[in-house]
Image (cartoon, rainbow, N blue to C red):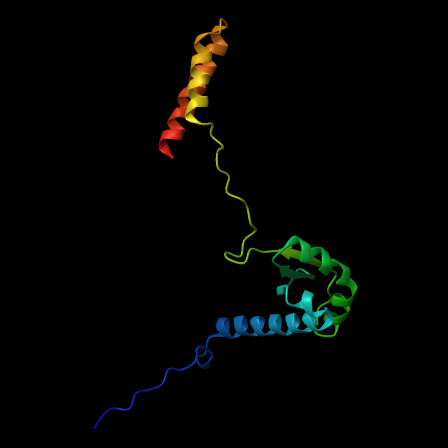
Length: 153
């Protein structure tokens, strides 16, 4: 006769105050987000991603600066709707921008704009014909560095 497998218990079924507290915080944030989205127009509500209360400030997260500027027009309506939902007073609203993929503020990865190999050779040849020694050495070092970077890519 086959043994009956015991089903997994949900994590909240165990006596763990930390998990219960974190779960209640998530539920509160979901209720607040739902309330905020109810106040906003549909196109703007879709762009509101997350919210939380920190130090009497309501932080609302969106994924672009354009939507953040639009959300600022609804500052008073959002704050008024939150006063009935939360116990502690909310002093002001802050709109934050997050990246969709990582959750951190986006920063562009910069890549060097290198000249062509002909341009690098032209700098090297020109450095040999300059009478000022400091400038000649600087251009020679520049052409060497550019050549090394061009070879590594």
